[in-house]
Length: 158
Image: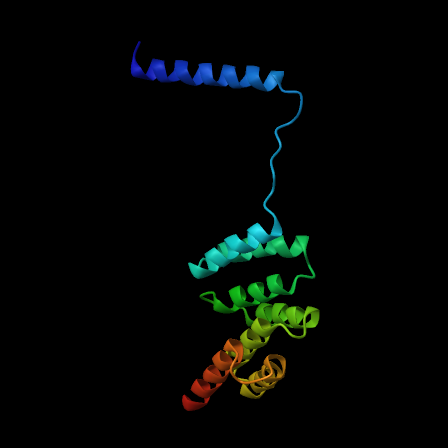
């Protein structure tokens, strides 16, 4: 038997065996869809790899399943802002939703502040810096420090 014929025979045998095994099964094959947490993990990995399309796809599904999840909206805003052609209106939409859902969301305040700097509105960024100072209770939390540094750099480059 030639290799091509042998491969065809093996494939046909495997299909027949699967079909017989499947026929003996009484129920459908259960396919478990990824949880929102798993989708967020995949999105975070995509963000780390700057794969904005993949991140937005996973987060888009996650937000449909949990529309009141501030973390998802924050990551959506981040992904829209960081892609090669930033979509600031969509970023602002999701950051504002995250803050509306959780007024103390430090990441959303930091990132919307950075988005305002991209939009040349440092006074708006400073409002979120002030909010972070209140939320953190000081000026040493990471989100406050990162946004303060971004504002200082913005002003230095003017």
